[in-house]
Length: 79
Image 1 (cartoon, one colour):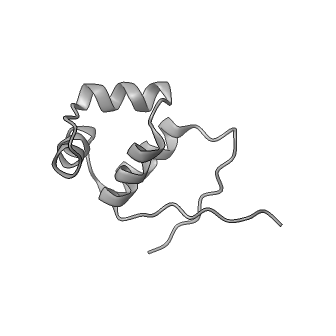
Image 2 (cartoon, rainbow, N blue to C red):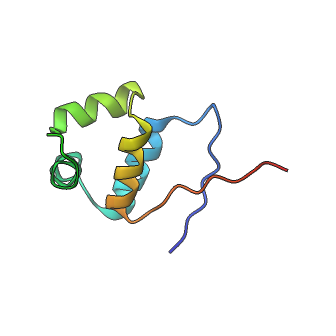
């Protein structure tokens, strides 16, 4: 099921990630565990929660989160 979310400079990454987690019924702890499995870094729920709340997720981390949750980022040219 596709969802379209228009993201601009006003988009709150905290709200976006929490919305995606809620839709998939996955906790931050489970997300951190899956991120650690797929990436070569160790992620903790505290580390991920802090990054989400501060809005300091790296682009590569956001791509990984989307992959885990079954989404992909699609960048389109503005007409």
